[in-house]
Length: 438
Image 1 (tube, rainbow, N blue to C red):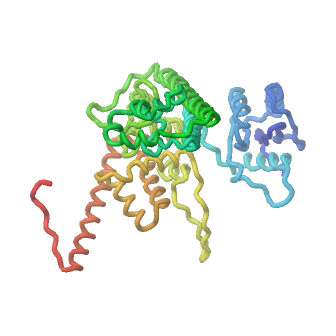
Image 2 (image 1 turned 30 degrees about the vertical axis):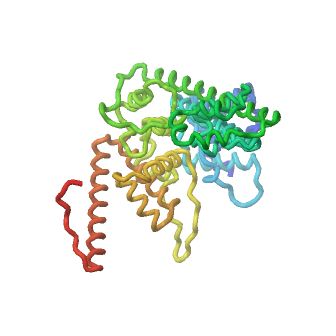
């Protein structure tokens, strides 16, 4: 197997403590440590063996430092999914793995993973870290509710959000020593007091025990700390976008068009929408239904503005885990679960935001498909359609996408009219068009 490795090729198996290198021109497998000095020795060894193309499995985050170092030294690096290069049955070891991968790579049998440029990877790092801080802050909201429940303070049952302006104002007053329900209720918003004043006052009579107040104080501190960390990520994202767009002509959103915005925890980034449009050279993904500026930023953080790595929209939707599987051989059918990807999840979230829309064809198509196939299948199917529109927008321009959406809505309207006509005839009725304005 080792003799089958073509000249100039090699592979690296990466672990937490050691890496193993197999390459052409030698029958041995060399091992190195995982510190920076050890990586330099590994690069020198590859150069000594005249290796110019290296493959490595995407193992956690261990591959990232070595990948960046190899690229900086001028080697062509292929990162692949280990599930696509499983060895033949038998004994498995790190030594055998790197030999097997080197042989596959030298014959062009490894499919490289998509790795965006450095700027896009930085944007992805910042926005994913922001998501982690927001998730942690959400856990502390649950801690706030638990502490209030233990004191039998039911404010979070009466108002919609305990971490809103009114809720936090009341919690801070409680921690400052206020116990009078009327005075605590007066801190709530006018609209809350207009409809729920009596309920709010009643919910603020509790059992003020010191250990539960301590838990409440710590939960509030954890929530505010998470929001502070999230704002620091927003500052880093803003600085990065300004650096990326420094030499680009500034772009701005279309005047007069309504933009879908986040109600809670929106990014504190100046002119985020305009920065994203500038980054993509004028292409605005928020014109697609369900895509907000935050969702647009997430997509750019995962794929970048250049989608040429995927030859067609089918390649893109398959990579995103949104394409239907074909798992039939003869009479045998095998059910394979779709992979979950970050890009696919972004499009699924967009579908959930437009599911209740009354005037969008994609929303109507989602509800129709959900009634027949169920919500999970409907979400994935419409997410694939949305991903297709996004690919066309980023590669062929908005005019092409708008024409496609218009054709889709017109086709859906004709199908609905045929269905209504057929149903009316079945019950002995006839349809007439209403000429009066609705």
